[in-house]
Amino acid sequence: MTSPASSQPATTPGSTPAPPASPVTPADAVPAASATPAARLGGAVWLALAVVYVVWGSTYLAIRIAVETMPSFLSAAARFLTAGLLLAGFLLARQGPAGLKVSGRQLASSALVGVLLLTGGNGLVVLGETSVPSGLAALLVAAVPLWMVVLTAFGGERPRLAELAGVLLGLVGLGVLSAPAVGGSVEPLGVVLIICATLLWAAGSFVSKKIPMPGNVLAASAYQMLAGGLCDLLIGLVRGEQRGLDLGAVSGRSWLALAYLVLFGSLLAFTAYAWLLRSAPLTLVGTYAYVNPVVAVLLGWLILAEPLTGPTLAGGAIVVAGVCLVVSVSRRPKRPGRPAKGSSARS
Image (cartoon, rainbow, N blue to C red; front, side, top):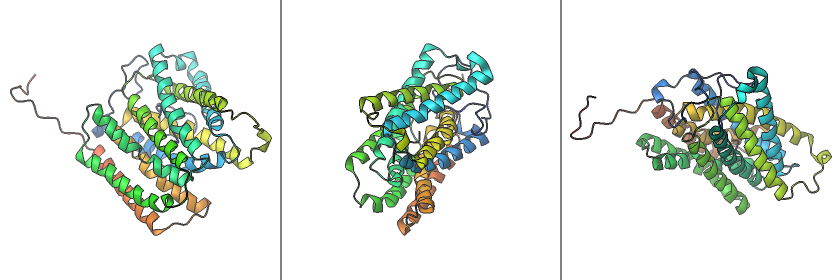
C-alpha cells in the first residue's frame, strides 16, 4: 500500500506538504489517542490529504513497474530503508541528535506501526502486484476505510450514521469500478494477499492512535520506515529473493519507479499520512483509499492506454460522492452527549 503510517512533521524535507497549523507535541507527550476535533481542522489537513490522495494513487502504477524487474520484498526494503535513512539524515542535519531522540516505548511503538503498515500492509501489496494489475490492487485496498470504521467502533467510538453511509457508498462505487476487472483472469493468491494487506494497514493506522508515538512526526516516520524496511529485507532474504538477482538486469524504468516511490511515495506522502493520523479523524483519513483507485484508473488510461469505460466513469463518480459525504461530516464537530439520567450538567 502505498503506505501508516507515520506522522507528518511541522517541517518536512523539500518535497513534503505544508506544515501543520498547530505546534508539534513535545517528545514526552502522551500518545495521540484521539484525532484533532473536526471543528479545528485547518488547511494543512486538507493539503496533506490531497497529497495522499494523488501521490499514493500514482504509486500503484510505480510499484507495478518496479516489480517488473525487481524482487518484491527486496524492492520494498530498498524503498523504505533509503527513505528512512534520508529522513533521519535530514533530521540530524537540521536538529542534531535531539531530532531523533525518543523514549524506549516510543521507539517500540514506531517499530510496531512500521511493521504493520510497511511490511504487512505495503509489502503484501507489492507482492500481490506481481500477479494483480495495479488498478485492481488499488480497488482492493479501498477496503481499508471499512476496516478502520470497524476498528474504531470496537475501540468504543461510535461512528456517525453519515460516516457509515459514506463508507458504504464508496464501497458501492468501488464495486462498480472493480466489476469488469474481477470478471477477468486474476491470480487468487494475489487478491488474498492484498486483502490481508488492507487488514494489517488498517490495524497499524488504528494502533498508531492508541500507543505512545514520538512527538516529532519526522522522527516517527523515519523509525517506522527503517523498521518496516528491515523487516521487508529479512522476509526477502528468507524467501531467497537475493538468489540470481542481477542489478544489471534491472530496467531503467524500474529504477525510476523505485526513485519515485522513495521520494514521493515515502518521503512526501507517507510522512503526510503519518501526520494526518494524529491531526484528523480516522474515518476522514481513510477516505484516501476511495480516491486512490480513481487516480490509479485514470493513470492507467493516460499512461498505459487502458480503456476508460462507462462503469469506470460511473464508479468513479460514486466514489467521489462517498468521499464528499465522509469529508463533510468530518468537518462538523460531534454534538456533546446528553448527561446521564440523574446526573447534573454542572461540574
